Amino acid sequence: MSQNEQDERQRQFEQEGEALLIKGRVTKLEGEQEEAQKRDEEYKKLQILYNKRVAWFTLGLVFTSLVTNVVYLDMSCTARKSAESARIAAVASAEASSTAAKALKDSETSFTQTLGQMQAQTRAQEGAAGATKNAAAAKSAADIAGHTLNISQQSYVTIGRQDGTVAEIVWPKEPEGNAGVVVYFQNTGHLPAKFNWGNDSPMIAVLPADPSIVKEPMGAKWSEFPTDHFFQPMWRAKNRKTGAISYSGSVTIGGNSTYAGTLWELPKERMIQLQNWDRPFTVDGTFEYCDSFHNYVCRKFYLLYRREPYNRFVLVSEDECAGFLTAILHHDRDLDYMSPCVTGTEREETSVPKGLFAPKH
Image 1: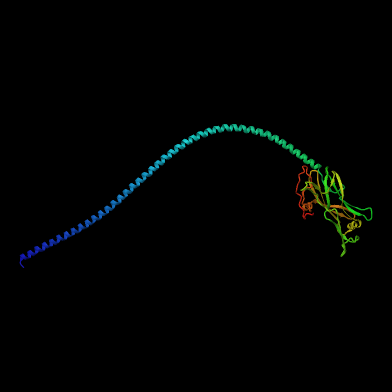
Image 2: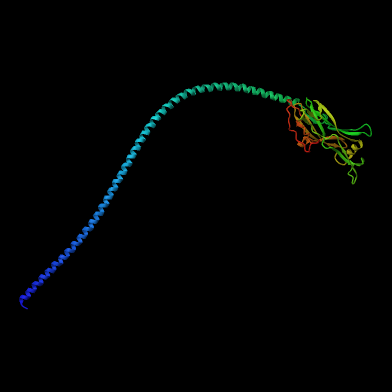
């Protein structure tokens, strides 16, 4: 190969190398431009997104500002209304203060007048209280005097005479007569008493048929001795049809006097049998009375006969009656039963206990 051909190839090679170099540089520049363009596009996208966000944020700020302005406007209106209400309240308070001051002045005047009236009334009441106190003291003194008079004058009946004798056995003069037990009562008051009394049991005693027996016999025959002086409570009643007033029987014991009554009687030999009987010889009875002040009293007594060497009755007890002793046992349906003691104004009381048995017709 000639020198010229080599030189020509050398120049071609150099030209091709330069062309390749230039082409490589162009390709690199193009790549760099594409990357730059991509970066610009991404930047633009980010810028657009950022701008949108800024726009939305700005819109939010505008909306918030608008809402805030509305709120401030409403608060301003409310403040103006509150101020107006406060002004009205202040005016009303001033008027109320003026009215209160006037009322206070009027009340001071009224209080002064009322105080004067109260002082005058108090003085009058003190005078009336003094008069009332004096009247009450006089009434109390009169009541005490009346009560004292009642106590000193009212009937008061007890069993026994003033010498302490409560009962005695009275013997017959004839051998075949009856012996009786006589009981004494005294009225130590100054006014009379309406009096009633009797034996507690309808039976005096149950004794052996043979009057000479004085100990408990075995298989002996027994005899009953009833009394005709069984206690029946006093009563007073008004007939429902006719209005007539009826009474039970009673006796009157005068003031400062003694009453002697026969409780029951037995044949003489039976009385001796009781005296010598190996059991206690007892007498049980009840008495009741109305005093002159219309008070009712009922007492139950228990006597014991003390044998040799005393040969006399002694009082064992005297107590208030049980309620059933004063009950009307046989009611009449045509009668309204009242207190046996007649009141001063004839006011009828219906507090007498009802009987324990059916009415007897």
